Image 1 (cartoon, rainbow, N blue to C red):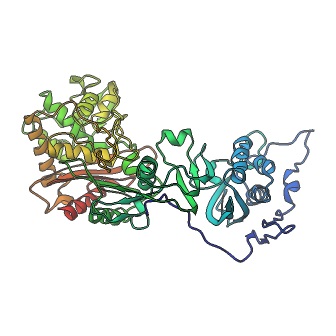
Image 2: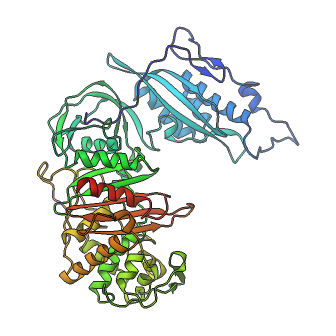
Image 3: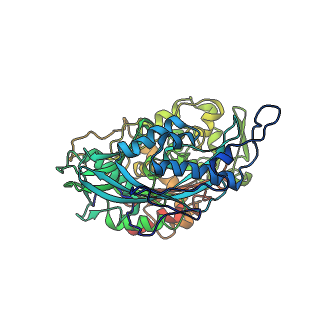
Length: 555
């Protein structure tokens, strides 16, 4: 309904159970009392005296320690003993503030906490409470979890404190508040006038939050009374929007029309749901209109706000730079050795392949890393940064699409890091929105800042690029991408979509991941799209089918 997402609500009539103990009513108040396990808290505190001091406990936590520490915390929180609950954590000050605000600012009462079976040191638990504010009340239920850790100074088991213990949508520094929302709800519409809701399009929950925050006061609605997450400084820096958890009284929604295509959005939702950690964006190159955005994970909008190394899809921008400077040409012979050393780093191709006597087009289509790194010595440290900013409109933090975005980062680097940035590693960071825009810029010949809400709605100024690619560079760049779609690493995914098309694959290595992030960006006609599957493997096999399906849907 164009509103921020809500936590599911339900009533339970049976008493809460904690580790086999029944939550009971004490003195007529609607909160439970828990019996501690084993010998209770006192037993847990006892330590054998050796030489007049208490030994520091070390080693993995036992099941009994996890059980006792979690029970101590949950019991105190439920009974309203805030100081006692806070003392059961490893950050009593932060815990005390948030737990105090749980009742005072969020107006949550009748709290019942029911733990589930521990999984190692992690203890899941359910929360049932009542939101009560100025003669209005509403039940609230949700699930959360805590983790028990051993304090280094004395080995005591304590709850590892983070705001998400109180509610999974909280980040450290956030608070819970119940009251007049201040921001009226919005009713979002797609480009055809249909209503856009998180129930219909699960990926759009964060987008709807952003639309409400930006347009709620401008769209003609009136505020309601609600329980909401109010973001702190760290969350604001990450451009996370406030989030509604429950409404006690509905406001009147204003209307905001978006550029989303219902057919493409439906297809995008379906495609990302088939893979874990997948994200995709579809644009119209001629205008910059965003036609679809979807993420398989719904808690964070990676498609718009992700900050990931784009791997070899960055070679589109690098190729435009090399062609501009006369360091490469599509049909000119170009080196692609097995390895190249620059700045003390040794750069490899996938499986150490090489292309002897091949063209730059062949190196681009097969995604030869050394073909690009070999040119680093002929470039200035800021050349790639300037190309990304001036031609592709990236890395200037000035996009205004209608909701929060990360607009790419191509920092000035030197030595090995500069060479790595040429192949989408080093300090370069992008997301599917950024890379869909790169493909769209190649297709249209000029940068059109993507947007989800027409600038005519609020008269905002869209970002501009300071220059266009020369006609010769643009023609060769399209040839590179067309050849890759027809005969290179993107050919299998793009099969049957030609001839008016182009594509580039990418794989980005990430520390700690067994498989790289797989990237794919492409255009067909007046559509451009980009996707990433994190820890999925090669882009042609993972993100490629997602992007290609959407190009077919919109074609």
